[in-house]
Length: 414
Image (cartoon, rainbow, N blue to C red):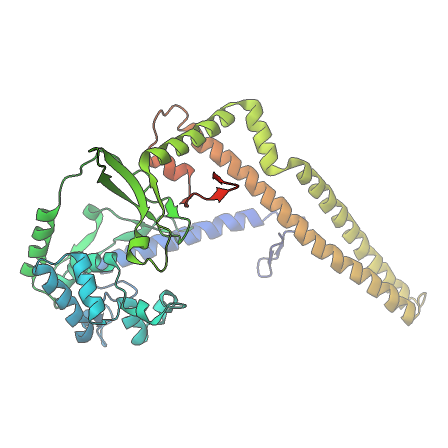
């Protein structure tokens, strides 16, 4: 891949780029400093009780004269009050969801789109008309649990892990910023606390001691939603813990397969595959063969050799074009011959430039594979002596696991 920076006079195809690494270091330090200052400024605003979020929570809107302050959006606030009222009556979240759907109340994303919030268009594209009224269980749960409706602001719920990435990670509740009585509440604090008490009373202790190891990496191959842990008791009285696609039960038209897998089966399969991987990485000979297979070193050498050949030819073409021009000026070449030779050389150079871009991309890609393999080996080395799977191990080594339904081929289940 070729990189050109006109202002900094940098071109990766040219050898005179000695100052580029130092500029990269300075630019990186500048970006880090700006990120730190921005975080500090936002934190100070949050501590003063200012709203620093991008979009106001459902039921509120920004004050027209002070955009850091929330005021009640009466139309949406009526829906919030209805949700809290139903919860105080003892209705469960699924029952509340059914009431909202029956009354054809727009979901928050559809309501915000209707009021000019283009940020939420992507949630509704390609969906049917009924989708606008299909409230999700987590949405209702988050409304009932959000302190903003009691008049408090809870900020710093998530943060960017590094200034080099946009990925946000959740912040533990004890580290969040809470400022009370910053705006007008939609529900009374007594009602809000009462619902908390009702939830605490309804919580029952777990009937199993299985740790939800695969929480963030397990997905349904049919619809792409995460699988949730569930359990039931068999006729023989045995407890069965498994993962299932909750989207199948909430939206059967979107996921009609009902994907599920027993916890013990999943644990055994993942443990077996990781054990085999650890064995390969621990074996020096097998590790080197695996690395060579991933990086395709034979192809790498050919690509580097071809890159050098092309660069030499392009340098020669530059000299030929320069000599051609000098001969033309000196009257050695007539106009027609000059134009003919020049067009041939320029065409060849253009073709070589295109091929060089492809080769550079291939070399970079193979280099990334090499780097990825070394990172995998380093991370795997932390867990070589582990006898059981842990959430930390799985999250570091595995990005995604998709579970589908068994299929038959030639009468056999695969």
